[in-house]
Length: 176
Image (cartoon, rainbow, N blue to C red; front, side, top):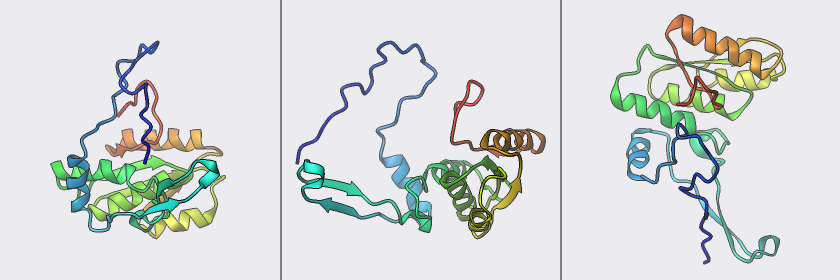
């Protein structure tokens, strides 16, 4: 097997953004947190021979993560698991805006760790997705005609209610 290393890892050539955190290479912490998650399980490694002329290719099939059908299924759930390690989340609310997998991750993580999830959706999101969120105990709030409007509504709700905002994007005032 041939491994290709990213030559840019750890370099900040031309980037004057010290506030951007470096990715962690600490595998033990996430493994410990995920062990606390009753629905976390290893996902299979698939072997593709001769894929696209590249020879042997191994891929990690993340579609079964937490029963959500999404490779993003552990992102927000991991953040919620970190919070659960520090405090009891009963009565705590996590809020986000979503048009897809991130909202499912927030809903699933909140459900597993005893918190509440509120997911803001724009009017363009299908009702079938809202039903999927409700199936994971999330409260769905319709807000605005696009993602940006639903994110603004989620941000306002977090501020007014003391909820924890979990966005899948960042901006200058929101980097965590």
